[in-house]
Image 1: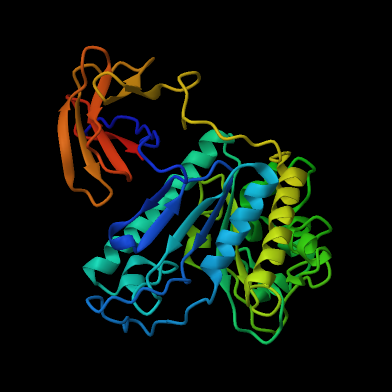
Image 2: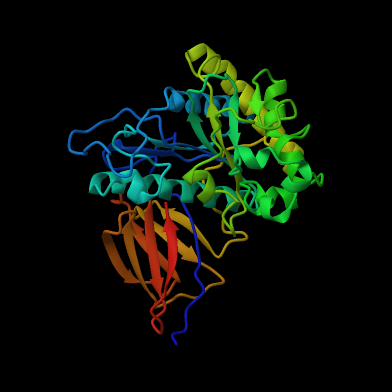
Length: 388
Protein backbone atom coordinates (compact mmCIF):
# COMPACT_ATOMS: atom_id res chain seq x y z
CA UNK A 1 0.00 0.00 0.00
CA UNK A 2 1.41 3.36 -1.03
CA UNK A 3 2.26 5.97 1.55
CA UNK A 4 0.36 9.15 0.78
CA UNK A 5 1.63 12.57 1.75
CA UNK A 6 -0.63 14.95 3.57
CA UNK A 7 -2.15 17.35 1.05
CA UNK A 8 -1.23 20.98 1.64
CA UNK A 9 -3.55 23.63 0.23
CA UNK A 10 -2.01 27.06 -0.22
CA UNK A 11 -3.55 30.02 -2.01
CA UNK A 12 -2.05 33.29 -3.20
CA UNK A 13 -2.88 35.97 -5.74
CA UNK A 14 -0.28 36.64 -8.40
CA UNK A 15 0.27 40.40 -8.02
CA UNK A 16 -0.20 41.35 -11.66
CA UNK A 17 -3.93 42.03 -11.45
CA UNK A 18 -5.55 45.36 -12.08
CA UNK A 19 -6.46 47.53 -9.13
CA UNK A 20 -9.96 46.02 -9.16
CA UNK A 21 -8.43 42.53 -8.97
CA UNK A 22 -10.78 40.97 -11.50
CA UNK A 23 -9.85 37.70 -13.17
CA UNK A 24 -11.56 36.76 -16.42
CA UNK A 25 -11.96 33.24 -17.68
CA UNK A 26 -11.42 32.20 -21.28
CA UNK A 27 -13.36 34.39 -23.72
CA UNK A 28 -14.69 36.36 -20.73
CA UNK A 29 -17.35 33.70 -20.20
CA UNK A 30 -16.69 33.88 -16.45
CA UNK A 31 -15.24 36.45 -14.08
CA UNK A 32 -13.98 36.57 -10.52
CA UNK A 33 -13.62 39.76 -8.50
CA UNK A 34 -11.33 38.99 -5.60
CA UNK A 35 -12.66 40.49 -2.38
CA UNK A 36 -11.41 41.09 1.14
CA UNK A 37 -14.68 40.49 2.97
CA UNK A 38 -15.70 37.03 4.21
CA UNK A 39 -18.65 37.26 1.83
CA UNK A 40 -18.78 35.24 -1.39
CA UNK A 41 -21.51 35.98 -3.92
CA UNK A 42 -21.94 33.74 -6.95
CA UNK A 43 -24.29 34.61 -9.81
CA UNK A 44 -24.77 31.66 -12.15
CA UNK A 45 -27.86 32.64 -14.17
CA UNK A 46 -27.47 36.31 -15.11
CA UNK A 47 -25.34 36.01 -18.25
CA UNK A 48 -26.29 37.14 -21.75
CA UNK A 49 -23.44 35.87 -23.97
CA UNK A 50 -24.72 33.27 -26.44
CA UNK A 51 -21.90 32.17 -28.79
CA UNK A 52 -23.01 30.24 -31.85
CA UNK A 53 -20.30 27.60 -31.39
CA UNK A 54 -21.89 26.46 -28.11
CA UNK A 55 -25.17 24.71 -28.86
CA UNK A 56 -28.24 25.37 -26.78
CA UNK A 57 -28.61 22.94 -23.91
CA UNK A 58 -31.10 20.15 -24.52
CA UNK A 59 -29.85 17.39 -22.22
CA UNK A 60 -31.94 16.19 -19.28
CA UNK A 61 -34.84 18.60 -19.80
CA UNK A 62 -32.91 21.76 -18.86
CA UNK A 63 -34.21 25.00 -17.42
CA UNK A 64 -32.87 27.87 -19.54
CA UNK A 65 -34.56 31.02 -18.20
CA UNK A 66 -32.22 33.93 -17.41
CA UNK A 67 -32.43 35.49 -13.94
CA UNK A 68 -32.84 39.04 -15.20
CA UNK A 69 -30.62 41.78 -13.75
CA UNK A 70 -28.96 39.53 -11.18
CA UNK A 71 -25.42 40.40 -12.29
CA UNK A 72 -26.29 44.08 -12.05
CA UNK A 73 -27.86 43.44 -8.65
CA UNK A 74 -24.81 41.54 -7.42
CA UNK A 75 -22.54 44.40 -8.41
CA UNK A 76 -24.79 46.85 -6.60
CA UNK A 77 -24.72 44.71 -3.45
CA UNK A 78 -20.94 44.64 -3.65
CA UNK A 79 -20.82 48.41 -4.21
CA UNK A 80 -22.93 48.91 -1.10
CA UNK A 81 -20.71 46.58 0.92
CA UNK A 82 -17.67 48.53 -0.24
CA UNK A 83 -19.27 51.84 0.75
CA UNK A 84 -20.05 50.44 4.20
CA UNK A 85 -16.76 48.65 4.90
CA UNK A 86 -14.04 49.82 2.53
CA UNK A 87 -13.70 46.29 1.17
CA UNK A 88 -15.22 44.28 -1.64
CA UNK A 89 -17.02 40.96 -1.48
CA UNK A 90 -15.81 38.03 -3.56
CA UNK A 91 -17.95 38.09 -6.70
CA UNK A 92 -18.16 35.17 -9.15
CA UNK A 93 -20.06 35.69 -12.40
CA UNK A 94 -21.14 33.49 -15.29
CA UNK A 95 -21.60 35.63 -18.40
CA UNK A 96 -22.81 32.80 -20.62
CA UNK A 97 -26.53 32.74 -21.22
CA UNK A 98 -28.29 29.94 -19.39
CA UNK A 99 -29.32 28.42 -22.73
CA UNK A 100 -25.59 27.64 -23.16
CA UNK A 101 -24.47 26.86 -19.60
CA UNK A 102 -25.99 26.41 -16.17
CA UNK A 103 -23.42 26.88 -13.41
CA UNK A 104 -25.91 25.84 -10.73
CA UNK A 105 -26.05 22.26 -11.98
CA UNK A 106 -23.53 19.44 -12.04
CA UNK A 107 -21.08 19.45 -14.94
CA UNK A 108 -22.99 16.96 -17.08
CA UNK A 109 -26.35 18.69 -16.78
CA UNK A 110 -24.91 22.20 -16.81
CA UNK A 111 -22.68 21.94 -19.89
CA UNK A 112 -24.34 19.10 -21.83
CA UNK A 113 -20.95 17.69 -22.92
CA UNK A 114 -19.81 20.79 -24.83
CA UNK A 115 -16.08 21.39 -24.27
CA UNK A 116 -16.28 25.21 -24.27
CA UNK A 117 -19.16 25.14 -21.81
CA UNK A 118 -17.38 22.58 -19.64
CA UNK A 119 -14.29 24.80 -19.46
CA UNK A 120 -16.41 27.77 -18.37
CA UNK A 121 -18.20 25.61 -15.80
CA UNK A 122 -14.86 24.53 -14.33
CA UNK A 123 -13.61 28.12 -14.23
CA UNK A 124 -16.72 29.29 -12.40
CA UNK A 125 -16.45 26.60 -9.75
CA UNK A 126 -12.69 26.98 -9.30
CA UNK A 127 -13.34 30.69 -8.72
CA UNK A 128 -15.76 29.79 -5.91
CA UNK A 129 -13.19 27.38 -4.45
CA UNK A 130 -10.61 30.15 -4.59
CA UNK A 131 -12.86 32.73 -2.94
CA UNK A 132 -13.88 30.42 -0.12
CA UNK A 133 -10.30 29.40 0.56
CA UNK A 134 -9.10 33.01 0.76
CA UNK A 135 -12.01 34.09 2.95
CA UNK A 136 -11.46 31.18 5.33
CA UNK A 137 -7.75 31.96 5.53
CA UNK A 138 -8.34 35.62 6.39
CA UNK A 139 -11.23 35.12 8.81
CA UNK A 140 -10.32 31.89 10.60
CA UNK A 141 -12.85 29.78 8.76
CA UNK A 142 -15.74 32.25 9.09
CA UNK A 143 -17.41 33.17 5.82
CA UNK A 144 -20.83 33.51 4.21
CA UNK A 145 -21.64 32.15 0.74
CA UNK A 146 -24.61 33.55 -1.20
CA UNK A 147 -25.84 32.06 -4.45
CA UNK A 148 -27.82 34.94 -5.96
CA UNK A 149 -30.85 34.30 -8.17
CA UNK A 150 -34.09 35.84 -9.35
CA UNK A 151 -37.47 34.11 -9.26
CA UNK A 152 -40.65 34.72 -11.23
CA UNK A 153 -43.16 33.61 -8.63
CA UNK A 154 -46.28 35.69 -8.10
CA UNK A 155 -45.60 36.43 -4.43
CA UNK A 156 -43.14 39.31 -4.27
CA UNK A 157 -40.86 38.15 -1.48
CA UNK A 158 -37.29 36.99 -1.08
CA UNK A 159 -36.94 33.23 -0.95
CA UNK A 160 -34.00 32.15 1.23
CA UNK A 161 -32.89 28.61 0.53
CA UNK A 162 -31.00 26.70 3.22
CA UNK A 163 -31.14 23.32 1.43
CA UNK A 164 -34.33 22.58 3.36
CA UNK A 165 -37.50 21.85 1.43
CA UNK A 166 -40.82 23.61 1.98
CA UNK A 167 -42.11 20.40 3.53
CA UNK A 168 -39.21 20.40 5.99
CA UNK A 169 -39.84 24.04 6.87
CA UNK A 170 -43.47 23.13 7.57
CA UNK A 171 -42.29 21.04 10.52
CA UNK A 172 -42.21 22.33 14.12
CA UNK A 173 -39.04 23.83 15.57
CA UNK A 174 -38.38 20.68 17.58
CA UNK A 175 -37.97 18.69 14.36
CA UNK A 176 -36.05 21.47 12.63
CA UNK A 177 -33.60 21.31 15.55
CA UNK A 178 -33.06 17.57 15.17
CA UNK A 179 -29.68 16.26 14.05
CA UNK A 180 -30.93 14.99 10.70
CA UNK A 181 -32.37 18.39 9.76
CA UNK A 182 -29.29 20.25 10.94
CA UNK A 183 -27.05 17.95 8.91
CA UNK A 184 -29.10 18.80 5.81
CA UNK A 185 -28.79 22.54 6.37
CA UNK A 186 -26.51 24.96 4.55
CA UNK A 187 -25.80 26.71 7.88
CA UNK A 188 -24.92 23.54 9.75
CA UNK A 189 -21.63 24.98 10.98
CA UNK A 190 -23.32 28.11 12.32
CA UNK A 191 -25.63 26.04 14.51
CA UNK A 192 -22.68 24.89 16.61
CA UNK A 193 -20.51 28.00 16.23
CA UNK A 194 -22.83 31.01 16.59
CA UNK A 195 -21.78 33.10 19.59
CA UNK A 196 -25.25 33.45 21.13
CA UNK A 197 -26.11 29.78 21.16
CA UNK A 198 -29.16 30.13 18.90
CA UNK A 199 -30.60 26.84 17.75
CA UNK A 200 -31.19 25.86 14.14
CA UNK A 201 -34.81 26.99 14.00
CA UNK A 202 -33.92 30.37 15.49
CA UNK A 203 -31.18 30.86 12.90
CA UNK A 204 -33.57 29.95 10.09
CA UNK A 205 -36.69 31.86 11.15
CA UNK A 206 -36.14 33.46 14.53
CA UNK A 207 -35.81 37.08 15.59
CA UNK A 208 -32.23 37.33 14.31
CA UNK A 209 -32.56 35.13 11.22
CA UNK A 210 -31.45 36.76 7.98
CA UNK A 211 -35.01 36.55 6.64
CA UNK A 212 -36.32 38.41 9.67
CA UNK A 213 -33.62 41.08 9.41
CA UNK A 214 -34.53 41.60 5.74
CA UNK A 215 -38.25 41.65 6.49
CA UNK A 216 -37.66 44.33 9.12
CA UNK A 217 -35.71 46.29 6.51
CA UNK A 218 -38.79 46.34 4.27
CA UNK A 219 -38.19 43.23 2.15
CA UNK A 220 -40.58 40.38 3.00
CA UNK A 221 -38.69 37.10 3.17
CA UNK A 222 -39.34 33.43 3.69
CA UNK A 223 -38.40 31.79 6.00
CA UNK A 224 -38.57 34.49 8.67
CA UNK A 225 -40.33 35.23 11.94
CA UNK A 226 -43.24 36.70 9.98
CA UNK A 227 -43.35 33.93 7.34
CA UNK A 228 -41.73 30.85 8.88
CA UNK A 229 -42.54 28.53 5.97
CA UNK A 230 -43.61 28.91 2.34
CA UNK A 231 -46.37 26.38 2.89
CA UNK A 232 -47.89 25.35 -0.43
CA UNK A 233 -46.54 28.39 -2.29
CA UNK A 234 -43.75 27.97 -4.87
CA UNK A 235 -40.34 28.08 -3.21
CA UNK A 236 -36.72 27.51 -4.24
CA UNK A 237 -34.79 25.83 -1.42
CA UNK A 238 -31.24 25.94 -2.83
CA UNK A 239 -29.53 24.14 -5.68
CA UNK A 240 -26.19 22.63 -6.62
CA UNK A 241 -24.06 25.56 -5.48
CA UNK A 242 -25.71 25.86 -2.08
CA UNK A 243 -25.31 22.15 -1.52
CA UNK A 244 -21.65 22.08 -2.54
CA UNK A 245 -20.19 25.36 -1.22
CA UNK A 246 -21.66 25.60 2.27
CA UNK A 247 -21.39 23.67 5.51
CA UNK A 248 -24.11 21.44 4.09
CA UNK A 249 -21.06 19.65 2.69
CA UNK A 250 -19.18 17.92 5.50
CA UNK A 251 -15.84 19.56 6.27
CA UNK A 252 -16.69 23.01 4.90
CA UNK A 253 -16.94 25.74 7.55
CA UNK A 254 -18.52 28.26 5.18
CA UNK A 255 -22.18 28.84 5.92
CA UNK A 256 -24.48 30.07 3.22
CA UNK A 257 -27.75 30.11 1.38
CA UNK A 258 -29.45 30.73 -1.92
CA UNK A 259 -31.23 34.06 -2.20
CA UNK A 260 -34.00 34.11 -4.81
CA UNK A 261 -34.91 37.74 -5.39
CA UNK A 262 -38.33 38.83 -6.53
CA UNK A 263 -38.49 41.30 -9.40
CA UNK A 264 -40.72 44.13 -8.22
CA UNK A 265 -39.02 46.62 -5.91
CA UNK A 266 -35.79 44.58 -5.89
CA UNK A 267 -34.15 44.05 -9.28
CA UNK A 268 -36.43 45.73 -11.81
CA UNK A 269 -34.33 48.88 -12.36
CA UNK A 270 -31.26 50.74 -11.17
CA UNK A 271 -33.10 52.61 -8.42
CA UNK A 272 -34.67 49.54 -6.84
CA UNK A 273 -31.39 47.60 -7.13
CA UNK A 274 -29.50 50.41 -5.42
CA UNK A 275 -31.95 50.68 -2.52
CA UNK A 276 -32.24 46.92 -2.07
CA UNK A 277 -28.50 46.41 -2.49
CA UNK A 278 -27.83 48.75 0.42
CA UNK A 279 -30.50 47.06 2.55
CA UNK A 280 -29.13 43.59 1.84
CA UNK A 281 -25.55 44.73 2.48
CA UNK A 282 -26.52 46.17 5.86
CA UNK A 283 -28.51 43.04 6.69
CA UNK A 284 -25.59 40.75 5.85
CA UNK A 285 -23.21 42.81 7.98
CA UNK A 286 -25.66 42.76 10.90
CA UNK A 287 -26.13 39.02 10.51
CA UNK A 288 -22.38 38.33 10.60
CA UNK A 289 -21.86 40.62 13.58
CA UNK A 290 -24.74 39.13 15.58
CA UNK A 291 -23.89 35.50 14.98
CA UNK A 292 -20.12 35.43 14.46
CA UNK A 293 -18.89 38.66 16.02
CA UNK A 294 -17.48 39.70 12.65
CA UNK A 295 -17.36 43.49 12.74
CA UNK A 296 -16.44 44.47 9.20
CA UNK A 297 -17.07 48.21 9.10
CA UNK A 298 -13.36 48.84 9.67
CA UNK A 299 -12.15 46.45 6.99
CA UNK A 300 -9.08 47.84 5.20
CA UNK A 301 -7.38 46.77 2.00
CA UNK A 302 -3.80 45.54 2.05
CA UNK A 303 -1.53 44.79 -0.89
CA UNK A 304 -0.64 41.19 -0.22
CA UNK A 305 -2.99 38.28 0.32
CA UNK A 306 -0.71 36.38 2.65
CA UNK A 307 2.07 37.46 4.95
CA UNK A 308 5.10 35.63 6.20
CA UNK A 309 3.89 35.55 9.78
CA UNK A 310 1.76 32.56 10.64
CA UNK A 311 2.03 30.86 7.25
CA UNK A 312 4.42 28.19 5.91
CA UNK A 313 4.81 30.22 2.72
CA UNK A 314 4.71 33.75 1.35
CA UNK A 315 5.11 35.55 -1.95
CA UNK A 316 7.43 38.39 -2.86
CA UNK A 317 8.72 40.08 -5.99
CA UNK A 318 12.33 40.99 -6.78
CA UNK A 319 12.14 44.30 -8.63
CA UNK A 320 15.74 43.92 -9.86
CA UNK A 321 15.20 40.83 -12.00
CA UNK A 322 11.39 41.12 -12.20
CA UNK A 323 10.93 37.61 -10.85
CA UNK A 324 8.35 36.37 -8.41
CA UNK A 325 9.37 34.05 -5.58
CA UNK A 326 7.18 31.60 -3.75
CA UNK A 327 9.10 31.16 -0.49
CA UNK A 328 8.57 28.31 1.98
CA UNK A 329 9.59 28.42 5.61
CA UNK A 330 9.16 25.86 8.38
CA UNK A 331 8.59 23.42 5.51
CA UNK A 332 11.68 22.00 3.79
CA UNK A 333 10.97 21.25 0.14
CA UNK A 334 14.48 21.78 -1.26
CA UNK A 335 15.10 19.53 -4.25
CA UNK A 336 11.47 18.60 -4.78
CA UNK A 337 10.00 18.75 -8.27
CA UNK A 338 7.19 21.17 -9.00
CA UNK A 339 4.78 21.52 -11.90
CA UNK A 340 3.02 24.79 -12.72
CA UNK A 341 -0.19 24.50 -14.71
CA UNK A 342 -3.24 26.61 -15.41
CA UNK A 343 -6.81 26.06 -14.25
CA UNK A 344 -7.50 23.78 -17.23
CA UNK A 345 -4.54 21.54 -16.44
CA UNK A 346 -2.23 22.71 -19.23
CA UNK A 347 1.43 22.64 -18.19
CA UNK A 348 3.12 26.04 -18.02
CA UNK A 349 6.52 25.03 -16.65
CA UNK A 350 8.22 22.60 -14.32
CA UNK A 351 11.40 22.61 -12.26
CA UNK A 352 13.15 21.93 -8.94
CA UNK A 353 12.67 23.90 -5.72
CA UNK A 354 16.00 25.66 -5.24
CA UNK A 355 18.47 25.60 -2.38
CA UNK A 356 16.81 28.71 -0.92
CA UNK A 357 13.63 26.62 -0.46
CA UNK A 358 11.76 28.68 -3.04
CA UNK A 359 10.17 28.56 -6.46
CA UNK A 360 11.12 31.32 -8.87
CA UNK A 361 8.34 32.37 -11.25
CA UNK A 362 9.08 34.80 -14.06
CA UNK A 363 6.61 37.62 -14.68
CA UNK A 364 5.50 36.70 -18.21
CA UNK A 365 2.64 34.81 -16.56
CA UNK A 366 -0.64 36.44 -17.51
CA UNK A 367 -3.23 37.29 -14.88
CA UNK A 368 -5.25 34.32 -13.72
CA UNK A 369 -5.40 31.28 -11.51
CA UNK A 370 -2.61 28.73 -11.61
CA UNK A 371 -1.79 25.58 -9.70
CA UNK A 372 1.53 24.27 -8.45
CA UNK A 373 1.88 20.58 -7.72
CA UNK A 374 4.89 19.70 -5.59
CA UNK A 375 5.98 16.08 -5.67
CA UNK A 376 7.83 14.27 -2.92
CA UNK A 377 10.32 12.14 -4.83
CA UNK A 378 9.56 9.02 -2.75
CA UNK A 379 5.83 8.97 -3.35
CA UNK A 380 3.38 9.47 -6.18
CA UNK A 381 0.89 11.77 -4.45
CA UNK A 382 1.46 15.48 -5.12
CA UNK A 383 1.15 18.29 -2.66
CA UNK A 384 -1.26 20.60 -4.45
CA UNK A 385 -0.82 24.33 -4.14
CA UNK A 386 -3.22 26.86 -5.61
CA UNK A 387 -1.52 29.92 -7.07
CA UNK A 388 -3.96 32.63 -8.00
